Length: 253
Image 1 (cartoon, one colour):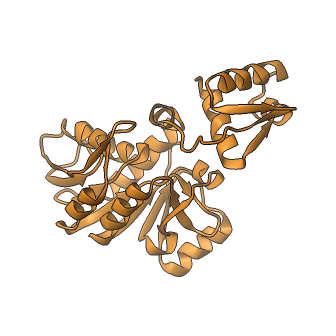
Image 2 (cartoon, rainbow, N blue to C red; image 1 turned 180 degrees about the vertical axis):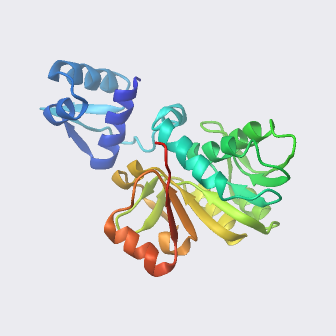
C-alpha cells in the first residue's frame, strides 16, 4: 500500500465508511485515483466497495505493523524526541509495544546509564546500539506481527520491577479521555506496566483521536503526562488540567 492508501484505511477504520468525493478533496487527487485506491484495497481484502465509496470489511481490526510504522513518521519522531528530552540519564523505564514507543527508543540512543525493561523486541533491538543502556526483555508469547511479547507471563514479569517512568502508546484515544487498544492480552500487560512506575507517560499522535478500539486501558486522568504532536481538543485538555496530567506538544513536526 502507498501512504495515501494507508491513510484511507486508517480513516475507514475510524469512521466505518469513506466516500470517493470527500477523499478526492482531502488528498487533492482525482476521483479516478481514489476509485483505483479503493479497488486495490478491496482486492487485498481490506475494504468492501459500496456505491460512492467503501466500508470496513468485516473482521478487519487494527492496521498492520509495517503500515503503522510508516504512518505519521515525522510526528512520531518529534514525539519521541520530546519525551526523551525529559528523561534524565541514570533513569529506569519501561517501554511497551508500539511504533511511537519505538520512536522514543531511537531518541534515547544518546542517553547514558539507562535501565530499560520492555516487552517490545523492536525497542530492545534499537537500544542495543546504546552500549550504556541495560536492556531487560520480558518473557511471554511472541506476537509475530509486531515483535511484541504479551500474555499472563509477561504481566507477571513486569510485576518484578519498580521504575522511574512507564512510557506507553495506544491504538486510539476516545473523546472522553479513555486510552483504548485492540488486544486484551496487550492491555493486561500495559496495565501491569503502569502499576510499576513512579511516572506514567502516554505517547500518541493526534490521529489516534480519530480512531476507535474496543478495550479500555486507563484514562488520561490516570497518566502523569501525555506527549502528542498537536494540542488536545479543549475537553481533553480540561480533563488533563483537572487531573494534573501534563500535556507536551512536540515541536518540529
